[in-house]
Structures are given as C-alpha cells and as structure tokens.
Picture 1 (cartoon, rainbow, N blue to C red):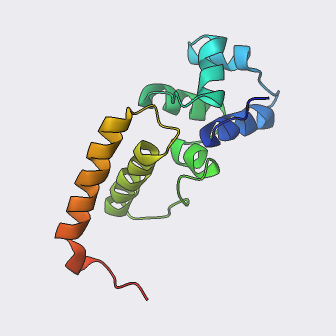
Picture 2: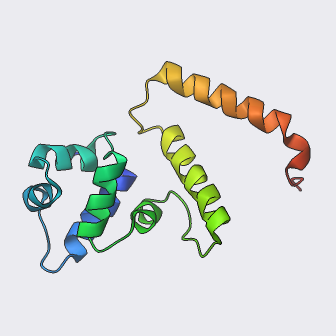
Length: 130
C-alpha cells in the first residue's frame, strides 16, 4: 500500500479535520484540479505550486506555514516580518532539498554544492557547534 509523503499526510489530515471531511475528489473540485492531481500531491513527490498550495491551505482552514509545519518542514513562527522572510527562505530550501522533491538529481547536486559554498564562505558568522 502506498504511503503519503510528509506533505501528503498534512493534506490528508487537513481533509479529515475539515467539517465536513473532504475526499480527494471534493478537494480537487474546490481547488480547481482533478482528483488524480490531489492524489499525486498526497502520494507522489509532486507538490502543489505556490498558488495551489495557498489554495489548499485556505480550503483546509490553514495557512501555508501551518500546512508545511504539519508536514515537518519547520516550526511555527511568531517572528518579526524580516524573520518571517528568512523563515520562508529556510522552509522553501528544505522543500527543495527534501528527497521526495521532484527536482532532478543533477539540479539537486548543483543546489547542494551552491549551498555548501555559501555556508563555507560565511562560516565565520555561524554559531560554533559544541
């Protein structure tokens, strides 16, 4: 039996918590996509684009951050606006680096090398690990 991705679990939980609960077909109709697209969001690495992610979160009575936090992509934030932008960058970077991301392996490797280079260049500004 197929297992949902982390984001898929979050979507499924939101569908179950909805009053009344939603099935994939109903969520798809409300979001303007097919049932098979909702199924791919839940069970495959295909993620909704930003517009659909916002729509799905709103339909489930959540904001995007809550939907992603439920999926394990970061803690909820009570941050100031500048910190919220930083949190969004971190959350999106985690999504890109997630092994279930649809990003091709060669592009993931380029991203990982780029991030490693940035971290090395700014290592003096990072807190020391104990």
